[in-house]
Length: 269
Ligand code: SAM
Image 1: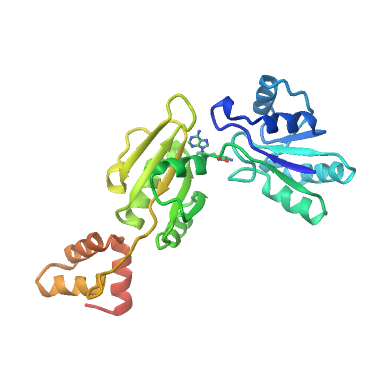
Image 2 (image 1 turned 30 degrees about the vertical axis):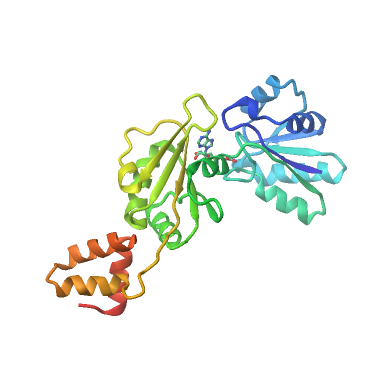
């Protein structure tokens, strides 16, 4: 059996009874960072052997782990925090195990994305976990542009030193939306910063770990009017193009870029 085992995202009390038992019982624990995991294991008096399993050594170690699984041993995968395979190593190993006919078993527990979502106050009925945005600007913009039309709450992970820049781009591409920054979840300084993207993008010196939860696109155009018609109407009233675009974006809660793209597509002068 290959176990995918959750570990706390900050608060050690979030370790489950089952996770402790499974980690004691398995033959081997595959950990993203063995030093970090050893501290956790020591705290819970778990003495199972550890093997390093991170992004850099994945293929070779995965092969070793598979061999042991095929020999009838049981292995648990843990990451530094939360659920393995969620923006953390583990997914490839699950695929390999399934292909080799080995059973996989979840040992659920803490997860930053869902913890942030359930306290966000945003719509939880339909959501999309987007993880980390790509690091290069071009890929990141493409990624965000695709997500900007989705009518479901969107959850991002982001490192604190990239957060300000990420929020600025999000505001530019998504337009005005409700947003929640869930900071230091389950830790002493846990807090939820709620507001509009235009307000929270100016967050001063982000510190700690963050999950960004953004309202989905809620584009309901009145029957008699859509953003382009409204833009045309404003032009006819004598407003300049830039202001008309800004007003239309504001009224229909879409980004200026979307209005701009629609104008180009329709060939409006
Ligand atoms: N596997 C983890 C999970 O299940 O949540 C996620 C690991 S990912 C490498 C790390 C990112 O998760 C951080 O950059 C941050 O965005 C988010 N995160 C993890 N712990 C957090 C916490 N305590 N509070 C807020 N965000 C957290």
